[in-house]
Amino acid sequence: MKLMIFSGTTEGHDLCRFLSKNNVQAEVFVATEYGAAVMEPMAGITVHEGRLDEREMEKRLTSDTLLIDATHPYAAAVTDNLRAACAKSGARYERLLRPALPYQNCEIVLNTAAAVDWLNAHEGKVLLTTGSKELEAYTAVQDFQTRLFPRVLPTASVLEKCAALGFPGAHIIAMQGPFSQAMNAALLRETGAKILVTKDTGVSGGFAEKVAAAEEVGAKVLVIARPRMENGKNQAQMQAFLTELLGLRNEKHQREFFIIGAGMGTADTLTGEAVRTLAATEEVFATKRLASLSPKAEVCAFSELAERAISGHARHTALLVSGDVGFFSAAGKLRERLLPYGGVTLVPGLSSMQYMCAKCGISYENLCFKSLHGRVGNILGAVSYHTATFALTGGENNAQTVCSSLMDAGLGALPVHLGENLGAENERIVHGTAAEIAQLSRPDLAVLLIENPRAANKNEPIRDEMLTRGKVPMTKEEVRWVSVNRLTAGRWKSD
Image (cartoon, rainbow, N blue to C red; front, side, top):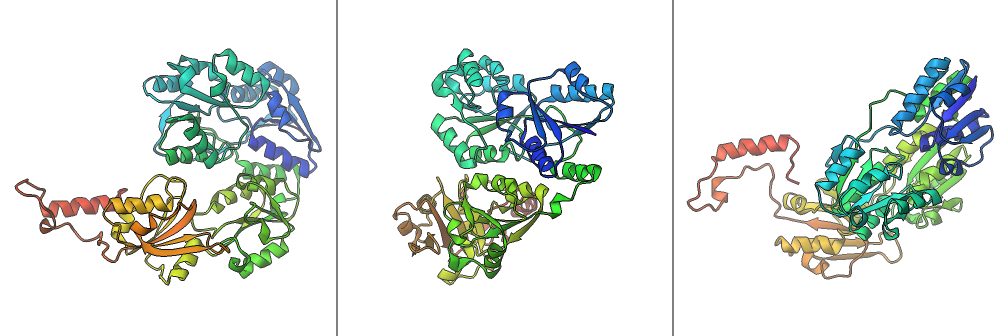
């Protein structure tokens, strides 16, 4: 059987790695020079560069060919050509899908033309993250030379295209992904963009990081919808299908990944299970801050953890993450990325919440948890309705900003406990009021424990005597109770 893969995506690249490790030969077709350049040399994998039309595709196919379409979900025309060529030649067609991600609070348009119309109806600078292929269409945006900041691949041909279309050099962001939430947020702030334009590019396309970054800085997200709903196989299903079809060893059972909660990032806060797991694994990947926990650790950026683990060859591989894997952790996304390549075990760790509560002698049985680290929002509702609230802070919502917001709401006298660099030699835990904590230096990453002995009972109805109304008519008390109960039972929550 002849195996052909039309790629140019992360999914196609990963499938090639899988085939090469299993000594399977395949021909891989990518459309651009860049697509060929990012494909590292792999045994058994032959890469062809250049776009093929339907007739050229058909010439290369036979009835004994298995063609795997791993092209981008927005390359609908290419997929149509591949399907048609397979139908005429008798080749077998299989689609490798990039799963979509759920999202909300985004504006959605059907295509690029609709995106241009939407931008012309809304003011503000724009971070354009849809690539260079349809860039010409965006020149129809009014004042595009001053409003738009296209983020494109750093190749000579792409940069020449941007310049030829009239985009000024200062507005062209030539960078290669993947991009973290922090990087996306930094670009939005640096450009002053109030709108981020993207496609639904899924996990490997960094879609979630774009949406989260826009939410962090208060920018709108304009999503160009996928051109169609598709049937096919995801990465795990495709590898299982090829394993059975080609009689391969089940690679999934050959590799095991362990995502380990590293507690406060010190040896003292590692659990016994974490220590034993680190000792038993052949490879360990960690950020610079956590790498000291294992002499085997290879240092890499957090955004590269999963890819480094996938590209490794060890049967047992560990990845270190801070805190606990189940408490506001990125372990969930890492697990999703690793699952197609092997078994994944989560090793729990000591969370900052547990550590801080123990230091302050406060039980966390009825604690309200909030994460404001890199997120938009406040905790006034949580503090108002809970006797104790734990908050992760950072970025624009640092500890000083949070405590200042409590002061502005008349809650400056509430007891607050600040924890910074927990578990480290320079650990600092400060006990005071919200007003006092607000005057301290601004720690970049810190946790807060906020007590409110007079917290309101959110289940208690609002009675007439609790309101000051004068002669203004007011809704009947019973009607208010029913309305609040209906809202509580639905999607609106008071905290």
